[in-house]
Image 1 (cartoon, rainbow, N blue to C red):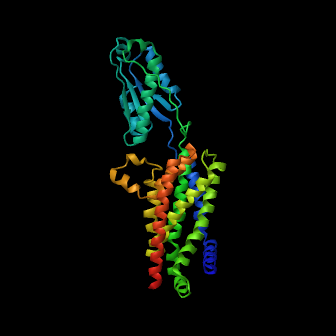
Image 2: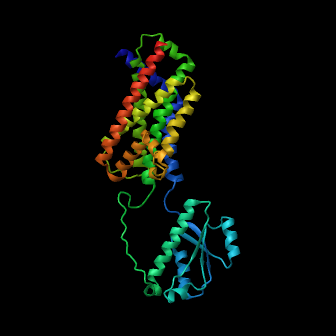
Length: 369
């Protein structure tokens, strides 16, 4: 026990003396939260749309005004197609609406009336916004116009209710999800440099000359960085709930419990990487490739997993951040779902145990050498 406590104290002093550890654990989460809170926005955006109206009726003029009154659309009127094309080409507008001269006549006669919607396909998300906004505004105007009785199509009244995130505020799931990115950085990137740094500095040889058992080395590094990670976790939760006022509806006890299991598995990945590479640069590159980038791209935080190719959907099943992000978003927004808690905790526990055994065996092999 004395040997273990001495190794934990050694690691703690090393963490305190290394500014990068403090930066990754506390400064980086703050920067990450600021970026996700104020720099990343997946909510509906206001787009600038050009309108060319060839129909001179008063009713259609009301349709044009509807675009100008929308909170999601900034409309500009153009008199010619050439001017409209130049505006799209120069990115002054993100889309266009062309109303033909027989639009109102066709509506009066109960015929199909067509409207041309032009979007800039080089920006896919914005193009989808333009199409959806144009269709929504047109249908709303049509349902309130005098042409409603001329239309044989039955309108369906939809009463929409958004559960768990009524405001449809993307920050309510992006900001909590970024905790997984921070914990991944601490668990994988930071610890991947630990053993590699000791080999570079020559302290590993000194450690091997002492009567230290492999389990002491493994537990000493696990416990030290586990404490650092959980302190960072508490700091992250404080930023989410107190500073940025993100709603939390779950259990703090279960949040920290399952977060500790996720950190345990992430520490195993980082220490396993550091046991294979004696060079800090190589260890950090492998950690970024196998830890940080998959956690950001393949975890479901920014891109839906069910929209990925089948191969990557199966690949994400091997990534711990996928399960942790699923849990933490449920805990923040839905108040926690027992099925999600149990399944994710079970997977992370099994993975963490397998990685711990692998790290122990690899450390034991290096000691024998």
